[in-house]
Length: 293
Image 1: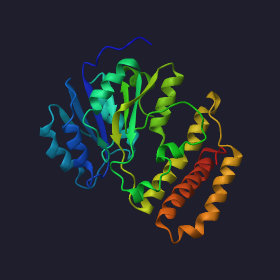
Image 2 (image 1 turned 180 degrees about the vertical axis):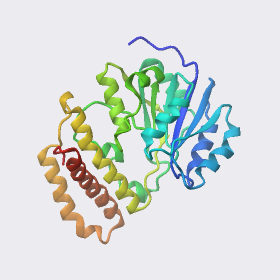
Image 3 (image 1 turned 120 degrees about the vertical axis):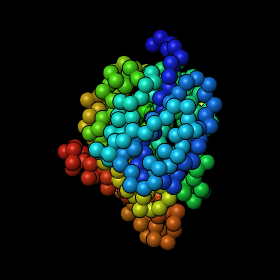
Image 4 (image 1 turned 60 degrees about the vertical axis):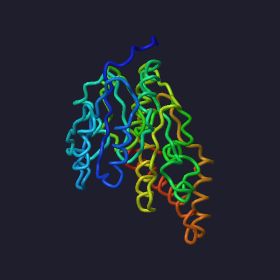
């Protein structure tokens, strides 16, 4: 594709749903961005019941252009992002999450990479926000682990995605019928429609892992349900099921390590990840009437 012109205005869209403990950390990071061009912050509240909206209101004066958009109708990140986009004025849209941490040059690096592509996948930092004990639960990063074995197209994480507004509008926005995996589906839809995806290792957002086993299990069950829906949508384009031997190996590992998970917190975390992903895949397969386990 032809090289793009620099963006006239960058819109940073941040969906938020009950992120009181971490939200101010991300807002402080965004307020300290080094990007010299014009940009705006659009906070899309997805129906928070904690102090997230109050925290956002307190931080608004620290930005040159910032506002809050209310999106309580459907508690989905995809819905919040779409509502934020509807109110955004920028020709380049960047997305990150309220509980993560953008590096100071994040917008600057994303805007530079956007000159070369239609969709921009930034780097996800693993170490900065996660103590070793929590990081040990994830030998493979969570989103990557959820998609292991797909062998399909590259994708951008919703924690660190850029897309030109004209491309997103042409694609119809984020798919709100996907409770999970909507960021992956957007990347794949874009590439199958002929748009380019570029990756930049220089634009870093640090991801915050779940701290409790309950939250970890819920997150990975959620990720697991996304696989069958993605498979149903993209199998005609070459997306394949997990290999039988790989799935069998995982189920065997879950069964064999269950006793060790009782006494080792590190093993409990790893076991929870694998068991929740497979449980989610089973439930998702039943819901979507496909076999993807």
